[in-house]
Image 1 (cartoon, rainbow, N blue to C red):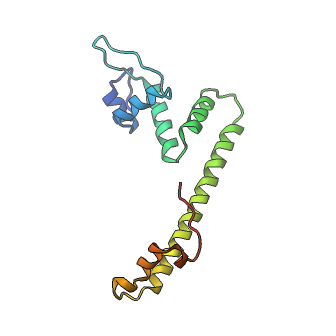
Image 2 (cartoon, rainbow, N blue to C red):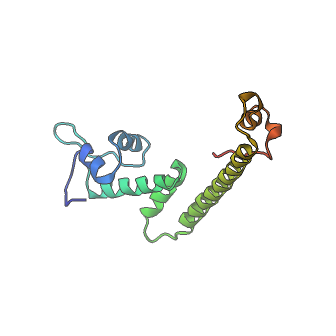
Image 3 (tube, helix red, strand yellow):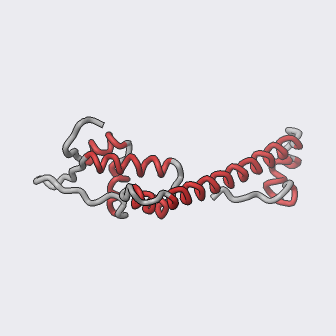
Length: 146
């Protein structure tokens, strides 16, 4: 980030890696305080706003939902508060990631099984199509990814 006092929303987007429309969304949701405006009505962002946008972007990239993000932002604003809540939120996110990995591994195994029994014959005897048409052909249940 360059040394700055206040920048426009376009510059804030470039400096933070967050799209202009997403910045407006975060403002509307209260994740980013409404910035002051120039005499011409343009939003003006400071270094703290850019840092907050980067924090939000990184948390979203790691998959934290909006509720967790609010809590994390609140904790970040209180540097002397214990970080037990942040740990709890990160542990919950890690558990969700592990659940999704297990679901993906199950899907991978099922797709491999479907392909292994397929003999590249006609569509009428295709194991892939049979499995998709009748779940009883699958080796087990499929966990949802979300």
